[in-house]
Length: 487
Image (cartoon, one colour):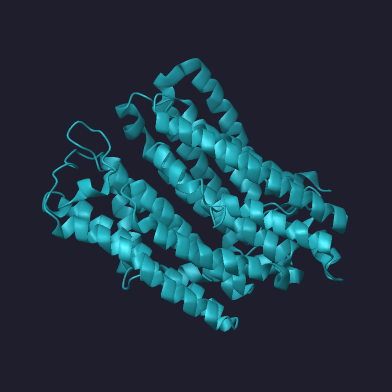
């Protein structure tokens, strides 16, 4: 094994580890007074990692040269695409945090450090080429996430969110670990390449159970039905900057990890897991749409929206083709922009005293006194619904196109029909903003950083976003090719 080559390939994770440890010492010495400085240093460290991983995506890196530590880690174009999305989402979650936590006098130096270690775990997840690496990365991310969910110690909802996330996350982790042990027992290896080779000769009942349990454990991490029960409660109870993080970066990491496990390790037996993915996709679309209709809290509504969108992305995975994988990555990139925009808008909804306004009824008539914010929220809602000409339509279009090209016309047809249900609750929000009598609740001023992030998100999901389709499609195709080149 060439240690210098391996250490070069894992440079982003090395940088995050060193930055996290150094900033942890700074936090110990400087206390919470240094929290804002540590936040910006964390953003700088993440930006440096983005510079390190970008060349692999630009060059379409794939093959044996991307393997490190005897094939346990893969730094290919697919991992680079996912990491860039993770870094962008984590950076946004760090930038929006100080204004929120300082208002409630809860800004602590540990917050950005926990984000850094979570990002480190997610980087290992998307680069995993072995079950051991997968599990280490997943647990490193999860341990940070449990603390982040309960970060507001004085808020009962936050404590409840952290406890629920921890208990259900431990259950999902056990299910995943059981599936991994079955897979290892019936294939004799933990390497994705070795598992794929072992399964070429046929699929035993034990290996089938291993696949099923592993997909069940990963379904919890992506909040796919029927393992979605934690999502609304955690999204509502966790501090909004943390919810912004949960809705974006870990979602990207878990979905791309699921793609790598399904298409790399189990790619030779796609027929064994396609039915599971198709069920999870359709159930997530329907349950996410129907569950959102009766919600009164905007964060719970966005939680069900995320479940709904995961269902659409899983249609691309069900296709089990390079086109389907590319479509998933395109959808993920657009979804990150929409989710960041949506939750930043929620952060900007404050009353005159600066307290969060999360009740949907309190948004009535917001367009009368906050026209730009209302317009941005309407754009996010229409884009999440997939209504043209907003960019969210393109994500759904490429996923359905991939399903049709894979011969799954009924799946695409059901998905398109079910997307109409979801359009109802998105349009309902727009109706409340523009046509109801003003409630005059969300009258508080917004932080300029929040305004800047919302403007960037709105620009990406606007019709101007279609200027990115060729560029985004090219890199998504390159990442998908690298993934299938590893099979």
